[in-house]
Image (cartoon, rainbow, N blue to C red):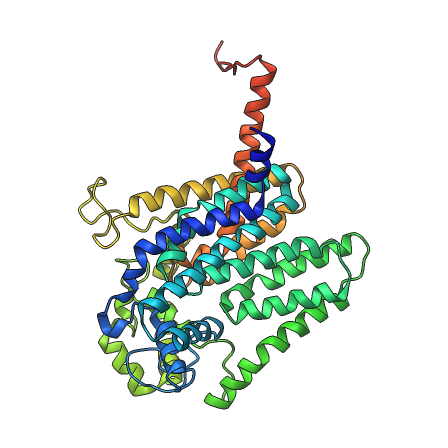
Length: 441
């Protein structure tokens, strides 16, 4: 490859530009899907779109469903306020707003190429960084989710990948300022998607342990990061207390999600028919009881259901774990493998093949890193083990796993780059011929 072309291909900014261009081409084909008038444009951002509409209309952070039900803590505030800002500028549920929001999602997704590239280089070197950057740029899930969904998924993936890169670098730093920035970034990420907080003690703990191994101090640094996180999230906690007169950390819909995934029906991984955004019966109950009382009722129903059917819960939890990492939930009802699993999900077979393949290759890369004694294998393992746990007990979807897809991509790139590097070396050693040796006599 000519030197100039090699430099261009290896430039993280060129990769990012290509990634953004690809996503924008897809946006041009898919943005009209946001204009579906069903249920007064509910598919346009779903609950985030509803809350944003309320904010842009002057009612404040409220009304996550079809009618005006008052103040809410259904979602964390960052993304609904972002959508509301676009609504203020370009109109509520308009084509212009859809294009702007999908463009922002595409930008978030494309910019994730930068931390993906840098954390791959920090962990495994320049060659793997190039593989990882291009893999993320061309990653089908990242392209689709950024161009077709108005949701916080792409922003969360970008923020969490920055957190991961921060973690890799803080293992060598005792300066207080970077640790303060680390905590501030965690706070912003938690106000976008609180599920990411499951990783903060794991990743920060690993960075502290690495400093401890070197005989360096870490107590003050960890305290500063925690304080910075608290400073960022406290205003939202105060707002919730003033509105609801009780402590509501981040958001209040956890037990609703548990109920949606644990009610005896396993026909789908996430049974939306039990969700008030789809079910008129559930929505009526939500409107009648009010948000906090409704969530408390879902908590009571969920705990009672799980308590009386522990074996069912354990079995479905296992199925959710498998679904998270393979995309597989169940066989077609008619048992014919060549037909789609679900008429509403015609791409399920392709999704299963891609999801399972990525998981297998990424796990291979992780095992390879451990076998070679790489210390950075641990944060990757912690991310894969820790982040999806909350979804194992609620409900699963490729969107929910997407925030840790950058780490999967880096591990898969490491496995592939190592494999092809070995094959290339073997080819050179044998004069251009790869030799295969039989195990038999």
